[in-house]
Image 1 (cartoon, rainbow, N blue to C red):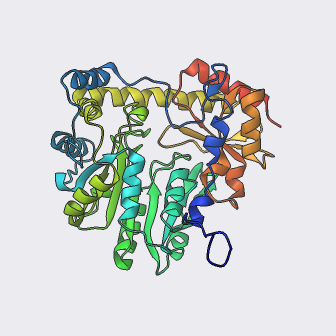
Image 2: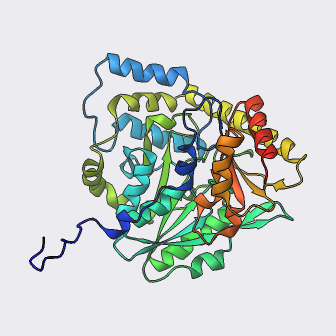
Image 3: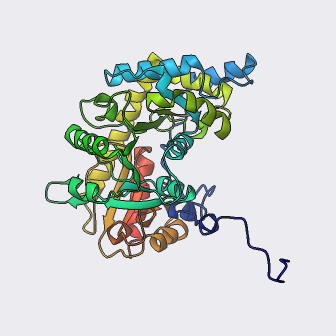
Amino acid sequence: MSPLGSPPSSPIRSGILALKPNGIGAVSSLGLGDPSVIPLWFGETDLVTPTFIRDAAKQALDDGKTFYSGARGMPALRQAIAAFYGRVLGATPDVARISLPGATTLALVTALQCLIETGDNVVIVSPVWPSIFQAVTQLGGENRFVRLREDWKRQGWHLDLDELFAACSDRTKAIFIASPGNPTGWVAGPEEQRAILDFTRSRGIAVIADEVYGTLVYSERAHAPSFLEIATADDNLFVINGFSKAWAMTGWRIGWLVHPAKLDRSMDVMCIANNTGPTAFAQYGALAALSDQGDNFRAQMRAYCARGREVVEDWLAGQNRLRWIRPEGAFYGFLQIEGLHNSLEFASRLVHGAKVGVAPGSAFGPPQDLASDACVRICFGQDPVRLREGLERLGGALP
């Protein structure tokens, strides 16, 4: 007890005590591990990590690669990442700008740690992966959302740059933009990226670009337009990427961060403090993923997801209460359901009643985002027969 007889105050930050699970976790917990549920809720395909990647990690274990391997990742892996960008973008960042703190989510948190102090804000293009705004909150920052608008007539998503820039204040430390986007599949064009980079340069604001779906685009490009193609090494740019999506390595937890050159020495310290570096033997699997075989697998992954996209498109053609804006990238369908007003309740009911798992649209933005609450997200990077069965179950359970 305190000297005055009252209970002592808690040292735990109130913002941490107020954290709540996002809707994806809340729904998946209802049916995770139930083999009768068709799981379309998570951001992963149903493809197992390719054999050549798994074999490389196994060999590393057999060779005793179980020691520390460098706080920022193996030099050979960092060099391979730089070469990867050279192949797919024609822009090769210096290895000194590449760090592997651990999982891709940790790469995001590391970028935010470089920028946010209590009371600062991050302007976020939404609908968006919920971990970004939860991470900002955990670090004591404020989230400011600028929502993409649906252009149903032109079948595209639209970012209002004037609205984006107007959301920035003197306490704005970064603009967060995911392209290709989760859950929308929206892809930012080069002209939008140039305008955002010019604005942030003029205001001393950073850009955090989530490009983890960069090679999962349904166009002739090898990679979606990237800020790395237009930025300099001195720009306040943080590019988040990793092996989870394009190489079917979600469980490996290996991601990377391309950061400003001036943070080279700082990253040595931050990566040690945060995680002491990524898992040693897993990095050998990641190194194999960046080989020619890995490039071939990425092409197969894109074709696999493109087929899933067509399955959804064909199925939606026969529906009168569901619609989507055909995604340009990633492997998600953000399905709008006529008359839906509580996506979390609907998604929860689907698990038990229809035996299909989807992510509630409410998970991808603030509570006041009523447009997203009329949607559910599915991952269409799935076996076509099983995907269609999941869609039929969803359609048959509409309220």
